[in-house]
Image 1 (cartoon, one colour):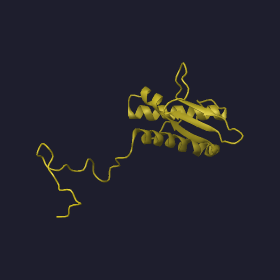
Image 2 (spheres, rainbow, N blue to C red; image 1 turned 120 degrees about the vertical axis):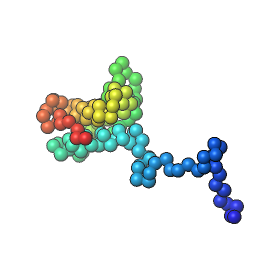
Image 3 (spheres, rainbow, N blue to C red; image 1 turned 30 degrees about the vertical axis):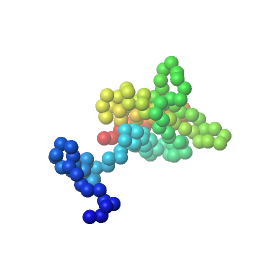
Image 4 (cartoon, rainbow, N blue to C red; image 1 turned 135 degrees about the vertical axis):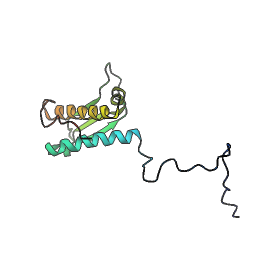
Length: 136
């Protein structure tokens, strides 16, 4: 027996080696942050179909706002500067804390993205093409 390969041992309860945690086709690396980014990206893609100028806007997801404020925002829009494009930031933790379920989180993410896009474009968030519910 090769000494570089450790021998297979039974676990301390005598049940033998454990199997894989999940089947190979299931992604184990999808974190909550990755899932949240996907929700934001889905909302952005839906809005870009109607508003092509959003392709020039940078969308970011941050955990929490950088500066403590009296009320915690769910997102913020920043107009374009001289050397940077316009930016929309969605804050993951405040959104997750306000949503009780996965579906509710998806709706809230979409609402936050719509509000920030409307603010950036100078539109009312109730504008019909903006306010489309996310598709499941």
